[in-house]
Length: 142
Image 1 (cartoon, one colour):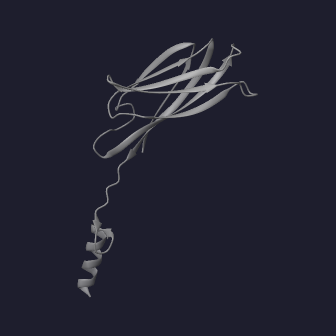
Image 2 (cartoon, rainbow, N blue to C red):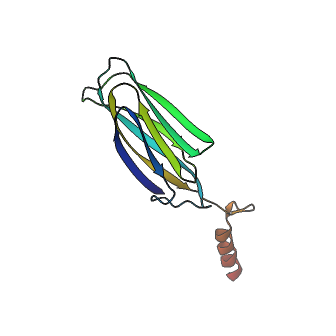
């Protein structure tokens, strides 16, 4: 499993980063899918209204995956966090963030690539073909 990390402090407005397959991630036909797990921490909330944090992945020009989270209050330590999951295409993806009000958020996260595991099954034994072949070879020697 490969991992790419990113972080940024975001003022009110928007910010973007492009994640490429080469950014610590090897993408090829051996990989089944990727996902991005992002943590958002609200550093301060100057507005009495809840803050709405919107994160978007744009895997390609025709596709945008957007999720919004409302952060209503600060925690006693001055920060509130939430977690979002995003699928990530096997090409460069644009990451965007915006937050309402005069707020700042600290964003960090990581992108995981789960390797696809392919098992060759032996229908007679329910084993991997190689294991079945080894056992068959042992039997024939006896």
